[in-house]
Length: 64
Image (cartoon, rainbow, N blue to C red; front, side, top):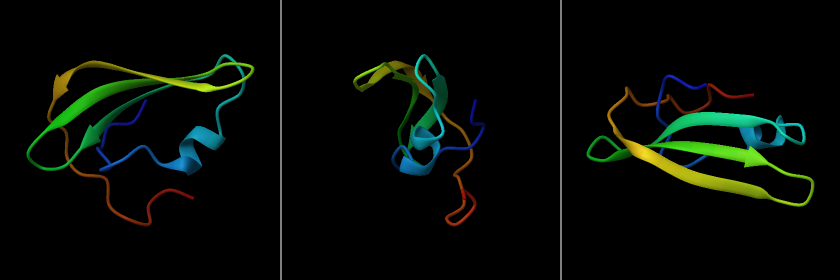
């Protein structure tokens, strides 16, 4: 679960998901964001928008 919103889903976070893993993250800018579910399956990554939200922005360079 991320409590800060990047403008797009960071590849570094998706890469950390195992098969069956899920990431819940707000995604967007300071005007519009969507709470998004990211799921890794055996063969792909699926994303689903859950609902509009507003979180603080994720600072660049925070994810490693």
